[in-house]
Length: 337
Image (tube, rainbow, N blue to C red):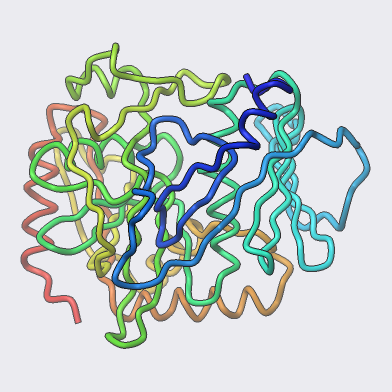
């Protein structure tokens, strides 16, 4: 846990990571994620996002205008997003708060005392940073996994629990490479007119049945967050990790099995494509008209250049080799404009 002494030590140390087309300079060590070399200088300059650790203010005051609220099945607030001027507050009750300051390229992390470090890292990586990136011009951030296949990025979309991470892990350990798990950051490269998928961190989050079926040794897994039984597996275990941004070729929407024992892939209609992508967008301010117009334009642009399919199969791990074959055949047969 991050107690006062740990916070003081952390404030004297800066950790540097390369994630989603940014350098993330953080006062919080992001677990087992590989740090960027101190003297690394990429061919293209990367913007820096600074993550600062602050004491929790411990106030129940609104601290801004509520723009979005997500509740658990039992009715409790899981996430509240509030807007104050140009800044946002992402509040996870009894866990952590993040003040997102896009103009300053800064996220301030204020953990509730006693919150485990693994949970703080998860909330920062998988909630706060994606929502920060959604505010950046030229970016589109989706709740999706992605792998590199045949030289192109393939996104995997679907509802939570449908097996996005499991499929991505299987593909990344059988000839493909993992681009990202759970958060897919797309950036429009105007010079070539394509949306490029930015590589994220080199780990996935899996339920125990998935890790066992995929042959991952339980001793190599680490805690993902204290409130879930999911565990984190890194690429050093068995997966390959893609480190370069790559043009997005296709999106696969996982849907319920069409028939027992069958793997079915088929193109989505225009309406189905738009709905699938819209539901996957990481949103920070649904009431912001300018942001909505920008996201709508980005979605339409992605739809014009990326093929989208529905993919259905039973949750049967024995089917994964067939699933991989079907995906490969579809990708190879598709000429992306």
